[in-house]
Length: 294
Image (cartoon, rainbow, N blue to C red; front, side):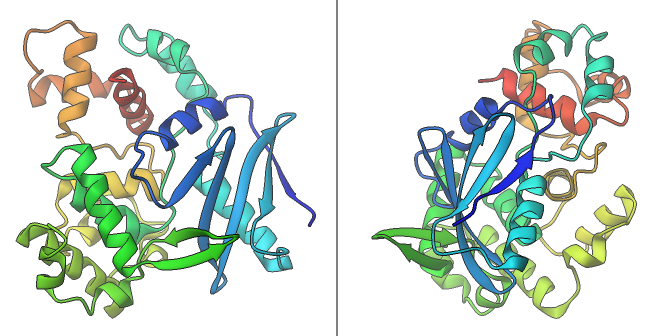
């Protein structure tokens, strides 16, 4: 089985990526084994399980469930480029951040850290809903129950790999089923609403592609349960809008409090003022501030 190779830019640190991917032992949508990542995805209507590692400034991708088909090879390259945001030129960001008192020490400490995204817009929106107003550990617990109950399972060498549930499956779920998984009534309703919006064609990745940030947010906010924070998060993680960032995020405010050595979290107005200096790179400024929280 011939592996696929992807050249990586100088401003990419795989170790930082692995650290992010290992942040929860409850994660089911990928596995980290040593310096390798194993993930299952659906490409061209088929489940593909691949292993990813770094060798000589290249990402090396190998199939774990058989030979890649020709169209799988191009699809998996596109997926990984999207997942790790390899197409973004970070040089201008580092130039800007190197002159900023808040970001300068962060980009030095975490050089090469990139946004680990969620190429699946449906997954991105649902994960944003699941994670709201609860701690990260419980959010992963909910996601784990959701994925094992409704996601696709791929078995390779006695190991089960999971793929995030499809909208058509989730749209048929009754709220009581999600309540049994300890979803709140609100999270259950919002998750099903999002799925039905995808099934009806009200929203899709293709429909949003190419829109301005504000137009894309407007489309997403039409879905009941998708507010400004959720829309910004999804547009940051799925579409890589450089100016999309969750302004109201508590973690972001805590990071600024820590970096500025404040006694209390900064006001929303102060956050807006600070981020005016990062115009065009708000998403990456947010990423590095989140990273500073450890």
